[in-house]
Amino acid sequence: MSRGLNKVMLIGNLGRDPEMRYTPSGRPVTSFTIATNRTWNTSDGERHNETDWFNIVAWGNLAEICKQHLNKGQQVYVEGHLQTRRWEDKEGTKHTTTEVVASEMLMLGDRRTTSTDQGDDPGDRDELNNRTEEDEFPF
Image (cartoon, rainbow, N blue to C red; front, side, top):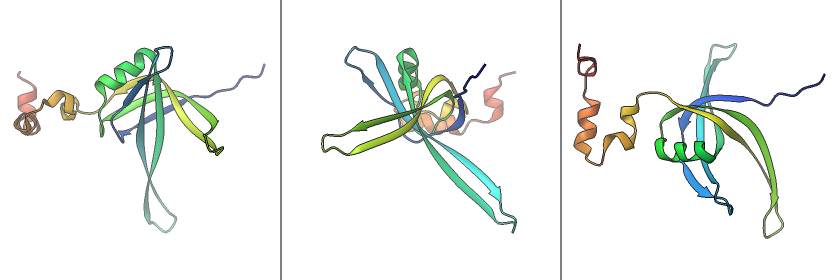
């Protein structure tokens, strides 16, 4: 028996706010990018850092959740599969893109740092950012 496997698991930070649109049939689709960082040392002991960017696409209910709850800079876990699309534009130029089609998404990190949780008042953000661990645990 021969089977294939196409599974991607990423943890990274959103590079931009998610953008949602609808297909002609009314199905929601949300796209965003996430950046992952890699660090390694060469044989000379020199430290290198590299950032990889991934295009993420979510469909249906997951698309609506991503649009509603994710913001630029937020850390997120995305699981899905790779998909390569090819198309030709109006000028006849051929394009190819590879993206991660998300099947699961988990918000990571401190939710207090997202703009939707902070409100519009900059004073509210300062108050949240200045909390100590004692403020967080009332016992």
